[in-house]
Length: 99
Image (cartoon, rainbow, N blue to C red; front, top):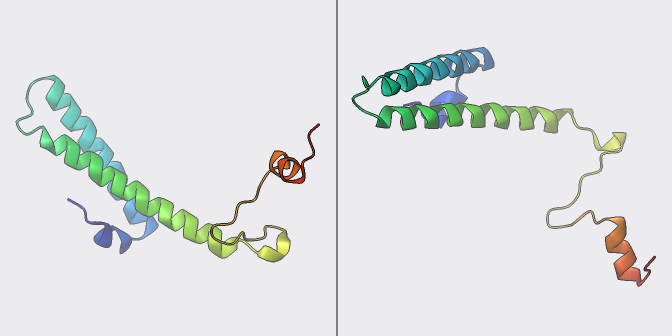
């Protein structure tokens, strides 16, 4: 079982390699299950969770990289937490303007 803490210490390439091997392992487990050779079907669920953890860590890194690259001066202003951006229909409803 791969813990998220240990997955975060891996480089991107190592994490992708681990993800690839986990997907291959899941394929083999599914094959063994279909042929009736799998003794412990809980291994499939554990492997699926490991794959999900790896995808989560990769997504966290993707979001962190996007935050670093985003620049508010280029027009993508940050919206304060809890504030909604609203739509044209929302502003029309608040002004009583109905077309």
